[in-house]
Length: 207
Image (cartoon, rainbow, N blue to C red; front, side):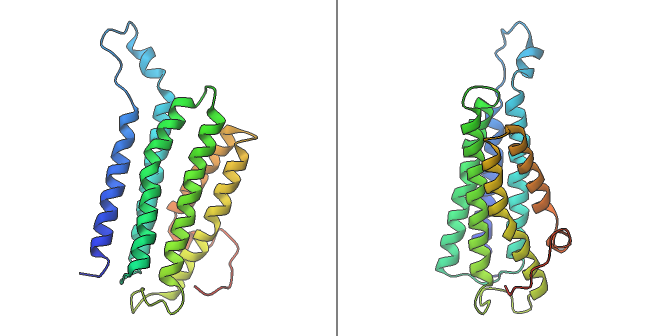
């Protein structure tokens, strides 16, 4: 068992609870409604928010797993950074509910900005966690870590904060464009780093 086993188990639990809570935003219509199909259709913002956030949390779990295939040791700072990342994950069900409640209504722009800001913060925390683990002498990484693979993770994560900042700015121009940017980013971070690094200019930096 690695030193990070408990950290990973705790994190998996947080991801599992957060992704499950998303479904609570989709309400079952009352039994006395006259048109059940219409009532179900009216919840389309909740369906959209649920699907997007389910995919996003799933992809974040995948990326967390990818990181910890390289990280084999932990210390107090790593534990704290991971805990802050889990805090961001826990906020996602709330921002999802906020988006579902206001999408297509007054306050939609504010809801989209808050939603995007959550992912901006999470992207920063992913970068902080990974860069701390891989920085300096890489003392928290596995002894046989593939340095090239670790560098590809760094390069992929570099684009997260800036891209989510752009998504926030786009909310003032087009809510659709802002949300579509989130979807594109989800696909980008779902791609294994070895393939994602081929889609963006390479940077010759050390981890």
